[in-house]
Image (cartoon, rainbow, N blue to C red):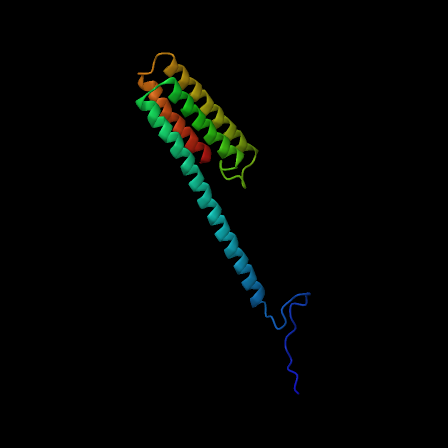
Length: 151
């Protein structure tokens, strides 16, 4: 019986005997590929959730435009607040992995702007100014602020 000289493995426990480094680089490539796929899936899920939330806000915004009643104002406000709550609680706002203190400050400023616009809209519609274009334009402004929030 003849024993062949083979290059030693990686020298580490659990290394692959006869490995020339190709297996290790293959493992790294597979891990990178998996990480990329996982990241892509997370981004698609994030996008789908945001689209679903904004669609609900839009639906109630349309109802409010057609019939600016107290009930529709209340429902619209609830949907906007639900959107903001879910976006912020679930980390859908901005890129949370790279967010720093400055980015968090921007998020809070945007949330405050949305809240001010909601108060303005409510005051205009419930204060008897339901027919003003300004009140209806506020719905568009709020939508823009929400989209900026998830930026």
